[in-house]
Every structure is written in C-alpha cells, then in structure tokens.
Length: 134
Image: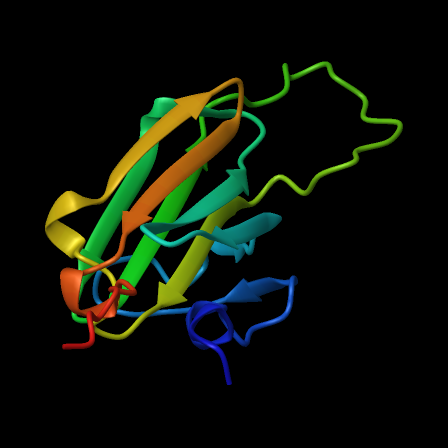
C-alpha cells in the first residue's frame, strides 16, 4: 500500500447518519467529492463543497486525522418548488486519516467558489533525501 492510499478514506460516497456527543444524531452528512495528489514535499486535497461559505467551514487536525465539515447556509424560500436537485440538502463531512507523514502544524487551506484546497506538508522524516556515498 502506498502512502497516498493510506490516507484515502475507505468510506463510500453516501448520505449517512452519525451520532456522537458533538452533534445531533438527526443531522445527515454527505461525503463530498474530493481528489488527492502527492508531490515530494506535500499532499494536496481538493474538496468540492458547493454552497459552503467560509463561515460554515470547520477543519480540524488531530491524532492522525483531518476532518472537514461544511455547513450550507442557504435554504429555499417557503414557496419554492424543487423540480430537480443535483446535490442533496445535507451538510458535508470528510475524514482523512494519515500517519506521521503529515506535519499537522503546517497544514493550510483556501476556500474559493465552493472549492476547498488543503495543503498537507510532509514531515521532514517522510520526505525523500539524497544520500551521498563516501
């Protein structure tokens, strides 16, 4: 298994109900569409969060896991009749597990037009280094 495969979550893309002390059990969450890329210095996650503003975004990094929660603020008007909806009305949640390869203190993120880009710098121990032979 490669390093990139080890941080990709194993859960499928589906609406699911979860309950814990931090949230109400009746709040549905959807796993957003995302991509992961890797280069020599970092991993980059691109997460699609349509309808989520900066104020509704929460990103936490703890104990080898990065959690992204996006809450949509828009709700349809009372007299609105939905004919077709491409995305569900639920909020978003994505969990990415990683080992010690990511330097959590240097993670940064940017949200622009519903697309979240997270840069996950590799820890120095995980970066490739050139060894000189004497």
